[in-house]
Image (tube, rainbow, N blue to C red; front, side, top):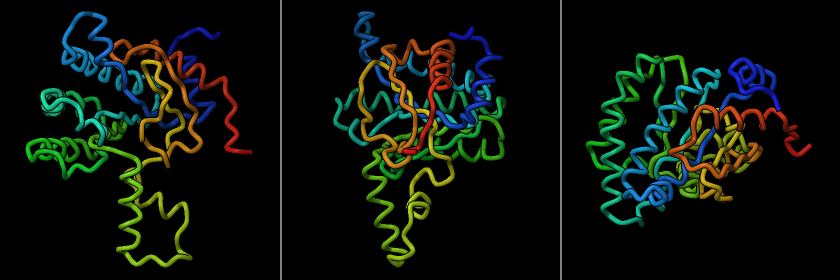
Length: 241
């Protein structure tokens, strides 16, 4: 095993052309339960992990980081928890926007954002507008996101635009997805040990390498990310060949 230092990690990223990491941030509530804390504290701790991983990606030279924050299925959770998550997202973006902008992070959001409350929609728009000219890490947050819904929406818009059958290609479908401005993820990480995709970027991860760690998201840090990238570097990507 190589030494886990930034020089080695950056070398691996350059050699493997790792540009885009997508993460399913799982385990906040289980982390809280194991620490005898309310689930809300797990979500707050998860925000700290998000900040650490964004900085780590910047240090390692990873250009794109896409995080699964709230799925279309998460609306089925208790209303108290849903309201807390929405408020946490809003307050985090408001309090962190200045630092994100100073650190050259470009904010992006995917999902059906029209279903969010107007205040949160305004905050998302402000975050995106404020950071639109930044050239550092492109931080994409998936909110009210479900990949099947995304694909259905893409098909509907293709029909609405009158695209002819012979014009429909994989490249065209990709242009109708929420991620049309992003490269497909090279690497998908899921924390907390669950071995599921959970309706996340189903089209986009067709040839992504997948890494599952038992570490809960609140405890996933720069060293954990380094370990994941080390393993990524040891794999041979075949793309079906």
